[in-house]
Length: 438
Image (cartoon, rainbow, N blue to C red; front, side, top):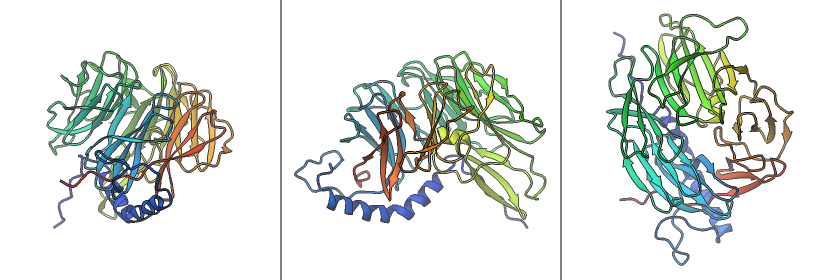
């Protein structure tokens, strides 16, 4: 008798990938950071309660997961430890010094971090224990608020300012398809309204992102090549048809339609098609989660899980994907989805960022390129001598200033430019401990 097929882990699509990679490198990073402390004893020790006169705490392996700057000098990074815990670090001097402002347990789940100015910001956790952290004094103090009682797994958050926010959650039932529910707050997370399931079955929503108070997009697994968009704070959602590639769209199967707003009326879309699974022949796949894009197919009669990267992962999503999916169409819009154009980034690797709907940057393999038409055409890549960026980490503040996360050997670093990408400087992030043991 054939063994029962294991149920997929909907609580954290790629937490197991993070843990495996982190545990392999944890001891190496710790040794390397100890060497850095020996060579650079003046580096500050981070962690509540430590002073210059106290011994430095034992450092722990960590990596940057998010970068957010509101000015040339004022910014934050979120980091994950090998244990699954997280921390938020702040700099007020362009990366010369760093302060640890927030720490917590996250069990390896992704986090949403956004600062709206030098004082106000939010950090929100996904997973089965959603928690929203708010600050109104630049991160010196935080208020922690529980999310609405969703009874399942929180998939994503989106805030357009300190008050207006949305949370997408998926029910705990294992019956397919799983029902998703959208929640909205108008008071910064103190109260929430249930907006119901934003998409009809069999479509499934995976991610919500708002670009303005009234305008939002969903990333979804759908039965056709269309995106979901709202113009009324998420109360109702309409299908937005997407232009077909040469040869037209295939019929049947599933479409991943992932949409990420850029700026203003701009948005980028990745459309990936998978034919239906036919028996256990290995033909076709079933979309399980996003981001990153995780699908299940059969290879020789056994189920296998594959993780892919899309152009959205280069913008937001993280570095855990493995290969480009087949049948991917990449599009961008400058008018909130009224019209779309095909895009062709310089590479499928690297990171993409933007400071308005028209002006995009790409960095990968020590090279830099830019687009002035929303990703439709790009300048020839030129060498800039920087480390490889983590996908999703390129934060372009304006025409002159940008940051991205990478690593110098095993040590996490930032790269920064103050002159539009002509020159770059490496910003070292300090060694620091994980959460204290209870």
